[in-house]
Length: 172
Image (cartoon, rainbow, N blue to C red; front, side, top):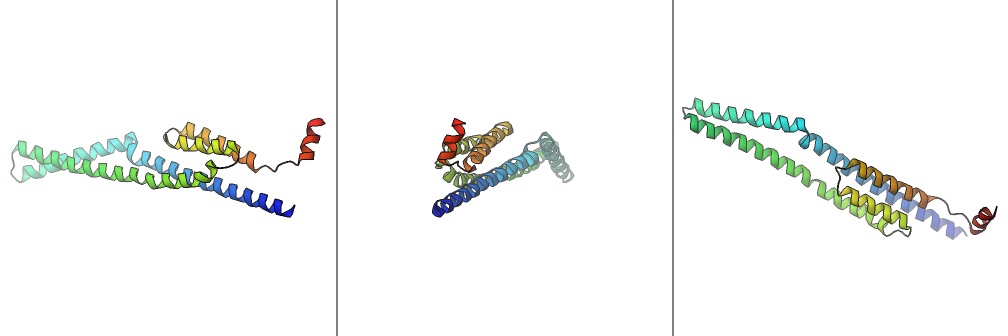
């Protein structure tokens, strides 16, 4: 009897740790995606980028004009300056997006034991979270998947009633 209780306690602790690991990594990925939206994708940031590109263009053109170049040549220098700025911005944005890939690998590693769990609701809830992560911008879908996952974990962690108690509660 004690061995069974010890094994059940170990299984419960393992499931709790696995669920915590998945929830932590999903939260980190969600935070990275939100930061990416704020830093790179928001309309305000896009407007700032365009303004800075225009300033680079004007500065490059003015600098070329001061050096005695023609209007046409100074316009090309300004466009080149703006293009360099935009290319650098694009490179930084792609580097930020690429940082999400290692986080995705950590999430899959955290989800693997939960996908193989004996309780089908836990495995299905985990699968739902993984599918929702594929569309990380859809917060409502991810929230629903996380609620389903949490409900499945909570149910799996409930102590099982002994057979005689189960039979008695159904007959009373």
